[in-house]
Amino acid sequence: QVQLVESGGGSAQAGGSLRLSCVDSGYMYSTMAWFRQVPGKEREAIAAIYLGRWYSAGDISYADSALGRFTISPVENVNNSVILHMDKLKPEDTAMYYCAASVYRLPAGLLLQREAYDTWGLGTQVTVSS
Image (cartoon, rainbow, N blue to C red; front, side, top):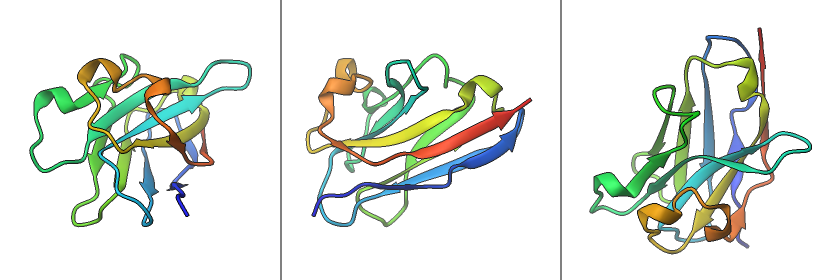
């Protein structure tokens, strides 16, 4: 059964850090990403990465809101896994964070497109207080 499992959400103070993890042991993916959603708003992309061995600069992408603060990376020696390390957290980062995956190596123009992903986790809540 295909299932993405997120973990690591919780509460943090503004300026603090959190690390989110996403793992799926049941399938092979080429691209994984993190999105977030606030009630009443559309789900927005945060970061995405190609998990293949031959990695280039065009295989990783960040939303403007994440640049310089968040880092996406695969878990070493663990297939189908990705971490989102979040630094310098702001109250506006409060949201439900979702892991997404695709079996395809997505081109740069699609890395942050929600419609490009067909597998999703159930989400993990992140709350940042001021």
